[in-house]
Length: 121
Image 1: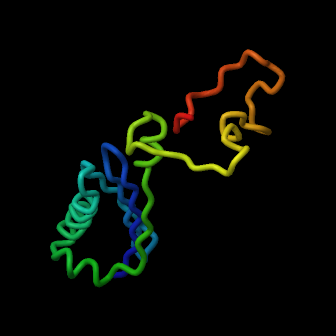
Image 2 (image 1 turned 90 degrees about the vertical axis):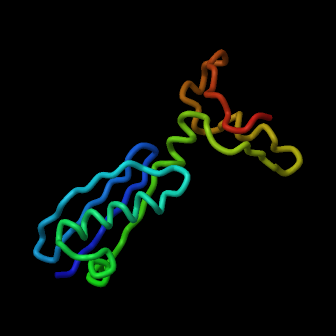
């Protein structure tokens, strides 16, 4: 049997969708390993293989597609956690990101407070 795997690495859980060639699918979930996301990925693959009573290596021989995504960056942005970041701009446009032209939520409200910028000026 051939398999396709979808992987979403999140901050707390790493989720998997295993699609089989007969059209059926299974969902797997393992705890994420933020220091090394590959560990959780391999743990999930190991769980899929174990359900089929084969080794991970044998299972992966029959995998034709792996699609990978992550919400780690989205979570870092939403919680303002992550690496210290700097922003380089061209002379004369250092305020362009804070001005947010064209996407202001309340374009004509001069007292509207924008969200806190990800990178301090």
